[in-house]
Amino acid sequence: MVTSGNPTIPANTIQVTAKAAKKVRQFAEGDGMETFGLKVAVKGGGCSGLTYVLDIVEGPEEDDKVIEQNGIEVYVPKKAYIYLAGTELDFSDGLNGKGFVFNNPNATKTCGCGESFGV
Image (cartoon, rainbow, N blue to C red; front, side, top):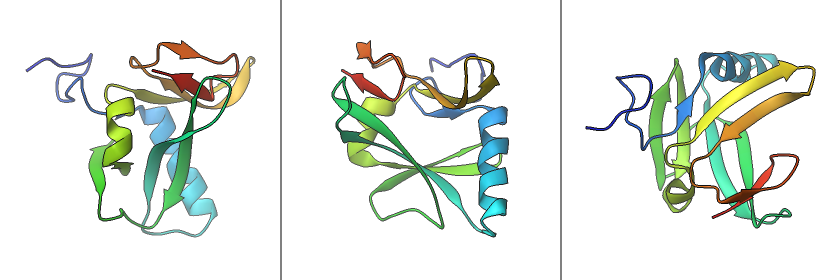
């Protein structure tokens, strides 16, 4: 089996770094949510064709693929998975900006702000 840098995580899955998982937990706890997961999806739009969608939700929908990463569940709609397989979701709080960062190997082009991509 081909794996990513972490030998326990397959390369074709969505990876959530410990820093991103911690930030998701902080947001969920701030909203008073005890049971939650991170919905990661895509939708048409943005300057490159597709935009990333992140939402903290109570649970998966019927067609979601469920992945556990760093103590949180990640829910990915099956239709979006083809665009997101292999993606790493990180969180940056550096001088160049603050927020979630997608490192998506499927993106053939991205916009300057990193919020949209094309395949």
